[in-house]
Length: 275
Image (cartoon, rainbow, N blue to C red; front, top):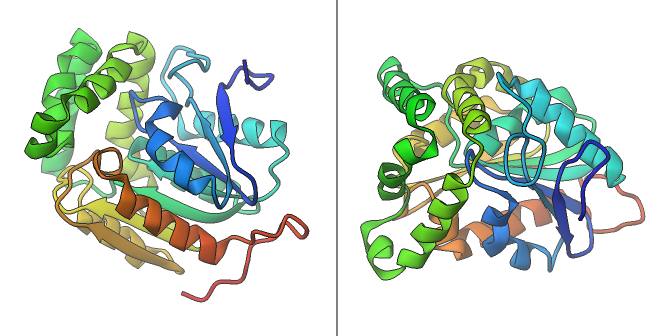
């Protein structure tokens, strides 16, 4: 089983400049299956289970961003990734921002997908209610309402197997680990809101038109704070847009990382980028 010395489960596919992908709370590395195939035609794609998830270690909480950054650093050391691209979805996008700040010498380019930033008091109060439900009832307490929020009605009706698969991932979570990661999701955006001004690498911020909890406005605000950044908003989709309709996401990621990462394995340096 591909695990690091510290126990992080990971999968690697493709060749070229390395690109590491981070999943959201309650998911596993398999969340990226609809991206990894296309991306592997251009990059060496690494997916892994975040701390508290899947087949990676599940220490008791609370978790700090530094715990997840240290996990990424150990994985990168194990795979000998001195310099790599990094993409994170939702909570993974928060960890990716923390990593870009903590280890800037190793992150060549950053993509943040459907991830919260600078919630209002009302938005935070709303998600804190869900955290209390998770603490009381585990993943089952919120998963069905979440699936309605994450997929378009049309997709839910035409592809119930997609919702069933995501539900299965969420329900498989360790109750304590899930609650600890969920707490970071709820409170962590405030911790990152101002420091992201210090992210130096080329950055892409994506959201979907109807992802209300991780809104287009949030993506655009983040892109406005980071020096070398742009925002891409995908029309018509909700939170799990990258799973429901992978094509626009895959195209945007290939375009962005293709322009900012060097494919030559010879020099291993990031390409110069003028945004």
